[in-house]
Image (cartoon, rainbow over all chains, first blue to last red):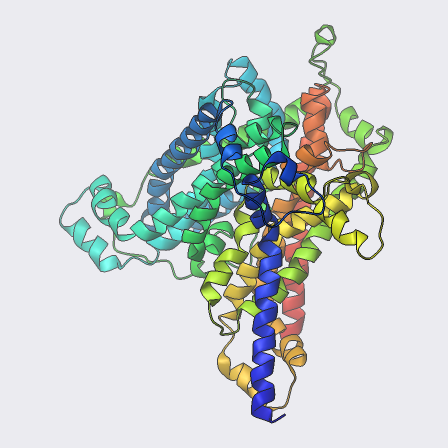
Length: 273
Length: 315
């Protein structure tokens, strides 16, 4: 073999290996989606069945049994908490970048990061006691309040890193024109940082959507979210649970792939771009 | 508050230094714009933490209201460290889960990042697909792992193993913690991959060229040239990965509920059980406070280790 041919072959081999490994990595998700299209008999069959007559029955069954209620809770909790986190977080990030002395701005950033590092289990007990006293257990409002707190650090550190990139001449111009702070934020800062803020909001939606800890500890029958529905349907049927699980993961997977570029930054507090 | 603050003396955050300092009108220098967010975070995280500390100094069982809320000093802590036979095994489980899943994710994530850093057809799509395990709802996917893949009767893994003559393994009773470690590592592999990929993009091409010219093979190039340049991405992957893996909950809840026995109880899971199964509020608060201290010590320890290594190698 010539050197050239050998190099070509090795390039091909590495590429093939990459494809195989990525396929293996996502195989469980693919197989789950496939199982959702099977009958229950086909789903539990060993050896596993690859070729079968696909059916939508399991998906149709999955979206019965209260699916609408769970979906409503998930959607409202994720969207409202993200909106609240944006409303609280954008002004905070704006203040940190443009109005605060460097030292207090950095102190605030450390504080923001540290709240995200706090183990949820540590604050579960007092939160549970307070929520019970306020008669707010099993209430969608409670989940919204908690998800807002969970997502606020993410929104602040991402917004902050985008605000740092804004050309300050534009902002100075706005201040010289006598534009108020609120006007500056709404008319100039938010539109200019819109792509980054959108990504931050999308990541916040994923976190709220995927939460299990607070959903399972603080809700029972009034405000459970979709992940709770999966666990309560577990015993019913493998194919049906697969269909339900597939529906649920569609949202974070679609959002995550769309906002892929921002994923790392969102998770690591802008420590790595 | 100050304690948790110290937990994150992150030596990274490069953009902190180049803050834009535009000329703000003098009256605008003082601002309250950050206060709503600050107050919100304090009310939702710091005050509950202080309450947890306060509760941990009391005996309080919701199921025995007649006992009241007597102050017991540090005796809840003494009980955990000395008398609670479950405590140290559970700390061991926690360490095994975090270290095991983190190491596996680091190895797998590095391999994927290196492979996906090569130019090839469909690379961006592949990268997107490879992030999927990290995006899927963890509790939901753990349940799927349990029923579709690791089930002793209809699981695919046992079916694959029978080809090489291995009899059916009841994964969650024979290897409960290891099974959970495997699932968690699967979820966190894409996170490591993304962080390392981001790091690899900042490795200058000339460095690699030079190594190639010097006749270094791929492995040597990675180990001697690329790996040292990736110190910061690895620090970030380990710091954030460890802290989030420590919080693993749904995966345990839906697969083993902490069992068999206590074998898959971790500190956060044990805290949850003390609170919401046995309603031992005093004990649960104590475990929660210990959890925060462990998280702080771990974060500081890792940071110190990392910064020291950097410093010694610079000198």
